[in-house]
Length: 401
Image 1 (cartoon, rainbow, N blue to C red):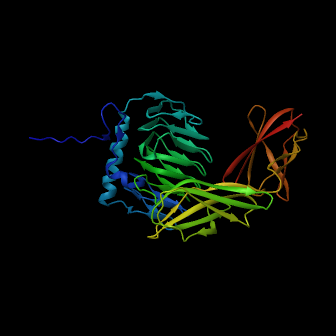
Image 2 (image 1 turned 90 degrees about the vertical axis):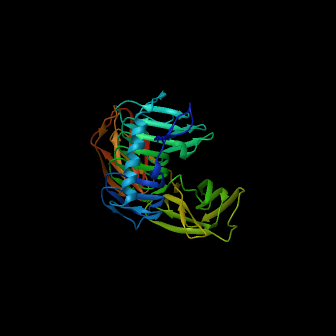
Image 3 (image 1 turned 45 degrees about the vertical axis):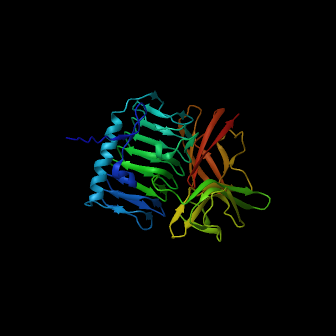
């Protein structure tokens, strides 16, 4: 008699074992129990679905793959496979203990664990370095700040990275995440956030807001090495450049821009190129009429079959004056001006010497400058003004003498 044993993990002896996702490996985004909603022009490469709950927002979102709804055999089996993979990670022993603030940490292959109940945060860059399997177990919800990044170096690849999150995942505006996230809670991608990997929840809603998600099981037709947008102050233009290292069945590129990461308009396109290339190829484009203030540029690639890939957006700032507070040092009467893009809609918060929030009001606006007034006179010291506009957060130090 021959017996077959099915394990929930793959790899060889003596190595960190990756969870076996089975049918869930086909999904870019899936929840076993929760609603699935999208707003904006999200682009998902891979299957999406829910086993329990409504699925809405496609269109305007687009999916290169299948949509699996409750009652389908695929959704039912994926729910079982996601739970099995999550439970398997419960059995994996920790190798390295990490802090709840992931910012600035560099992790090596193996099992890394955040073991406290403190909220896990990433407000900058988390680096995963080395060839091998990464299992990162977080014993609390994960929140990433605006434009945070997970960077893979020295042979690390997104298909070998697995996060287990005991709580919700909230990706901040324009965050760039990589890896498979097995989550015990909701998954929310804020405006412009991108994920190369998978978001798989055992229970909780999935919410998209104009995002790009690419399942690592699906090879992209183009390997993008870099994409940058740079202001040319002398000409008030923006230079866009990008480099690829591999192109397969490539029809061409379109560069788009946006003020709010929701509505994008075409800047220009590059077509009539060789469909297939294995060499480094450099491309350039100039935006002769860019938006003033903060704006965003992204690259859209189309292959010969008509399928489209949208890459994460980058931000630029074009203005005659620099952002900031003036005068600085600030007068102790509590009145000063702030240069910014959208004085009417920006959110402004003011913090005192002891980090407590202080009341502040918008007195008037003039030519992109916002006149602010505090509730009373200010004691000498250093204060912090936080500004949120167009999906970005900036901080300004104020000195009162």
